[in-house]
Image (cartoon, rainbow, N blue to C red):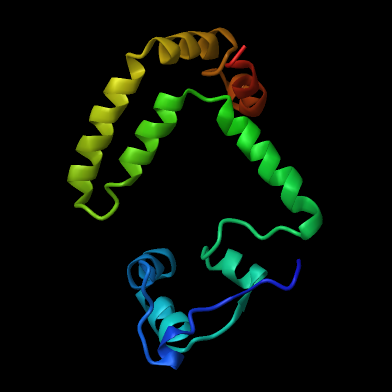
Length: 148
């Protein structure tokens, strides 16, 4: 990996982590690590450490970065926009009680499953064997074929 270093130096400066840092970090890393090591300890972390702590999604070398980002963007662009938007809404309920989040998720699921594009893709998924043992072992291939 490259020279990537992440840290939260605010406490050393005399301020608190902001920009949602005091809220997001404990949810990502656990309160103990977020508070003592990252926020108050102001420690530096390289890409491998932050990936292991789930502070970042994935550590990539400079040579890999463009290809991985392009492939992910291309893949997401092939999906129905409504499903992407509703998934983002569902994930916004993480701060509420789980019961409320699950109820909202179910409502959003019911809305998306009735959309014509979702109906078409579900039928195609089934036709390609998506719910068979063999299909489960080849989901990447099946997913690539859904937008056809």
